[in-house]
Each structure stands twice: as C-alpha cells, then as structure tokens.
Length: 628
Image (cartoon, rainbow, N blue to C red; front, side, top):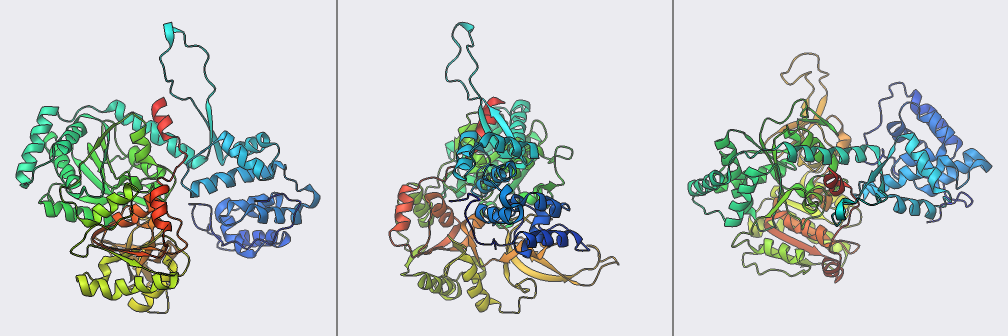
C-alpha cells in the first residue's frame, strides 16, 4: 500500500462509522460541534458525512483537533491512510510529510485499531514498527512515542517464562522484555483479566472434597437416570477443587455438557455456595435450558445470557462488578470460545474472591468476533486446570460432519434422516436462490421445521449470497413493509449488533413496537411515541434505545452466529468465500437438528478446511497469567 504524502489520492468517501467497536455519534443538540467539524472537513476536501463519526470518536473538540491534525481522520473506521494523507496535503501543504509526528501518532493508533478488528489485542513492537515503515514512516520510535503520549495507546513490557531453573542460585542477566503495544482500553482489559484470573486462582478453596464430589456426581447421575462418563465425573471433581477450569469439548458433546452443568449445580447446592450458569446469547441460553430440561435437570440450574448475568447497561457498562459481585460461588459459562477480553474481564471482575469459574469451550470453533482468544489462551497458559469432556456415544450426523471439519476433512456424514444435506450451487445467484428456497419451502415442507426455527449463516456479508442480500430477499418473502424503523418493520427478524439493557451483540429476535409510557410500570411522563423492542428467545421483550443497533436477522455472518445454536441452519459459502477451518466448523456446529450446506466455492472450501487450520491471534493473556 502506497501511503506517502507525495502522491495524489482520491478524496476520501468512506462509510461514516464510529471508531472500531466504539459508541455511536455523541449528542450535539445544537449541531454546533458538528458544524465546526463540517467546515474543517470542507477545507481539506473531505465529505461532510464524516462529521458525526468524528465527533463520536474525538469528542466536542473534534473540529479543532482535525484542523490542527488532519490525520485524526484515521480515528473513523473506513478512512484509509491514503485518504488521510490527501486531506493533510490539502490542509497543510508542504508541511505534510511521511515523518510528521502527527502522522506517525495517528497511524500507530490506526494500525492497532485495524489489528483489533482482526481480533488481535496487541502487537509486538517489531511488528508495529514494520507496519509503520511500510507506510512510509522512516523514524518509527518518535511515532510510537507520540502515540503513547497521546494516551490512546499503551506499552506493556513482559518477560518470557524461563525454560530452565537458575544454576547454583545465579540468576545471570535479566533478558530484555517483550514490548507490546495495544489500544489503551484493550490493553487494560487484558491486563485486568489476567490479574483477576490470578486472583481467583489464588483465593479459591475447594468447595467440596474429591470423595464427596464424586459421590454427588454419582447420586445426580442416578437421579437423572443416565450414567455420567468417567471423564466427565473426573472433570467435575476438578471443578469442585480448583478455582478456574477450562473444560474442552466437541460438537458431539451435548449430553456431556448438560451432565456437567447438572452435576455442577448439585455440587454447588450440596456445598451451599450457589451456582450461576451463563451462555453467550439469549438463543444459546434457551438452547441450553432445553437440553437441561430434556435430561430432566431443568430444575437444577437455569442458564441466562451473559448480559443478563452481568446486568449489562451498555457496551462496557455493567451493574455487576467488584463492588456488587455475582451471588454465586460457582460460575459456569458455556460457549466460552465466544468470550472476548473485554467481556471476559467484566465477567471475572464480577466474580468475588474464592469463586470457582468454569469455562466450557469447543476449541475447534473460531475465536471471538471481538478482540481476544480467551478460552484458548487460558488453556495454553498452563496456569489453570484443563480437562476434556467426551463426545456422546451417538452424536449424530451433524456432529460427525463438524468433527470431520475439525480434523481437516470436508465430508458429508451419512444422514438417513436428512440431518445433513449438501446443496451445490454454480454461482452466487444460484446459491442465493437455493438458500431462500430452503428456508421458505424445502426445510419446512420436508422436515416440518418452521421457518422461524431456521437460521441462515453465511460466510460473507456482501455479495449476492451474503447476509445483506439474503436478508433483503427474506424480508420480501416473510415480512414486506416500508421499513419504518431504519429499514425495519414490526415482525422482522433482527440481529442485535451492540450491548444494551437485557440484550447483547449477537442476539437474534423479532422486532416489536410498543409505546413510550414513561416507565416500565406505565407511569406518566412518556412521550407516547412508538418504541422499538426486540422479543428474544425465552420471551424477554427488550426496548432498544438506538435503532441503529438492529439489522435484519434472517441471515447472519459466521461471526454474528458465534455462540448460538438453532434447530436448523443453512450454512452458505458463496464463490468469493475465503473461509478457514474454524469458520466452517462454527457455521456447521450451530445446527442442532438439521444442517443444509449451500456450497458455491467449488474445491476452495475443502482446501480451506484442509489447509487453513487456525485463525492466529496476537494476544498477551497467557503471558499475563504466567507472570502473575
């Protein structure tokens, strides 16, 4: 990418968005702040549509900041370095240079924001320096120091764990530390998460001795009328003894997971510590509760969405925390591969000293949609106990197909009941047509699964067979309307894209519309205006403060589907798919009873499953834990 200010570039016209993962536009009732920003943007040849995102990113002084430093445009997601350089030349003339400290400062933060969008929590100094040099910055140290001085970026120095003990008590020379740069909020969240986990490990005491725990597990299995696998029983004894555990499992371990939660609830009840069970989304919680009820353990523990457990109010704002911790001595989180560092940090902060934390994680899944790789980092850190739960004796065709993908093989398992069906498509147009046909006709007619229990999970958002196009087609078929609420209408299936009271990013529900009555009890003082709300699985009806937090939800991307499961899934792989093994696995493992795979990639998907075995992420959590 050529990004040197010496060459011309087109006027930037990016999609107006806030900073990566950041809040929406800040309130500006009089429009004065946005007006000053628009004037500054006009002087440098940038579109006025960037004004609100810049105010959201930079605050009320955005106009003055961008006038003094045009590279501050990079704080808006979608603005490229070439576009910011163009605006800088227009505003600064000959003063604009590749080594301008303002450019280096903004570019370092921009590179870290881009890395965060790819799931990384931090970048090593050499990697960040190399990226800066590639962007034309010749003196990288002043650029990185300027980014640190601005406060948006932090430096973390860490020491590798020594391989050998010191000989004869001589420590020798201290090695140079690893130097990591991170966005301040992510760096602090990862540091807090690691230190809080060390706190839980250090303060925990057994909530039950091993013999009593084994007896409790055996008694629970007898009550449920289903034997517990010895490996599950051994893992549960560890849960009773250890402060933090990661219990790994595959797509075919539904019974083992349900047994684990039911027996953990019995251990918590007998030891009188109490239990809290959380799942990533409302859909995941409803699915887990159905599994517990099917086992006959529905009265032992009830899973709730993590947002409900933490009493989430907005992104990064939770009523539960260190001052008001979760009221349970045993906290179990299913679907833990979904956890990113910020949510995990909030969860562990809300666990009081001595709490036992259990993460149930399917390591074959893709890592979280947001930055971090929490469950995998914990398991690899060698600082917590890790156990493996067994697959069910007859896990079924969907689990066998997913297990094949986890092992690098894309083979359709034998499915006499049409549990797994592969639907070839020669083009994106054909893939879209077959997908809509499956959800509207084929699956409901042949399998008697109603459309509302069928979820489309596609590998892309754009394109003819991406989530946006498929949602447009589904809306025309299921709920045509004028799009009264930002393109949506009451009755639309919707995807929630941000956290709020009672809901979380990744929730899928139905849009309902009520009236603002001024309070939950109907007190006076309301505006009487229509208020959009989302009806979630389980029946909760949650008002949504910002309709921009909703998108059509008949079709979602793999990242948005992460952590949830549905009765039937149509997994769509358009021709332009650049999938990986974890992404393909995550899409397929989201199905419980039926999986249709719409395959329009030719041999590319099988090659990706075979060759692209992981989605590497740069994170610091394992080192933080080992240093603790």
